[in-house]
Image 1: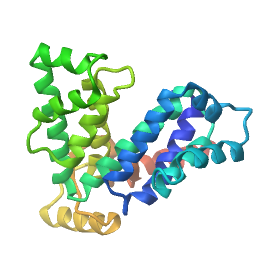
Image 2: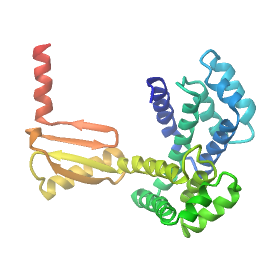
Image 3: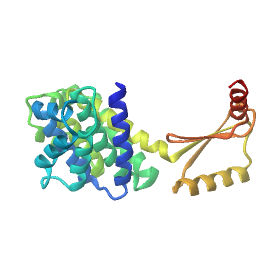
Length: 269
């Protein structure tokens, strides 16, 4: 991924986090519907990704096309993407797709780790069912078949699946965007895994923690992150002393090895 697109994508994902607390599945579906419009209109994609165009003009175009047709949040998210710079036209759509999937997984996340585990299992269950049957693969990848027919067929493969799982699977089979439906579902599985990492605290220590130390650490981390984390404690003698904690993208390194390395850098510098 080019640096320009990577930076724009990261800003979009960071901004989205502020909306996830109150977002429901309809926001994800609206973003997917906006994506469908972008994918079907080359002139629109060019207009929204043209580096010579002004931010004001691009955002005005987004509002002209989508205001009143999707929610204000969906318009705001799309307009913010239009204000960014992209290395290729497709990068805008790929990021919008990732945002839509992130909203869906965040809805499942309200059930805690169990909600995410269930969603991941349902998505993988769909892929397993398709992989085991060549006729299903052909039917779901047939570009001449109506999207509604493929969605109906896909839903039969995951009876009892959540609304979130059915929505993501429906998107994958109706608009795979040049991929196999199962490949797009796998992308959605990765989105779930990314949210799951927010619930896991990987703790590296030089020697085993006592039950009391582990309980205190767990309580402190749960309070700091506002959720009940799963602790994954591993021994790493290279730390020398102290500990290192990773929760999602956050890293707290309080190891002696790190402190010594920093001291050496200061002495050399």
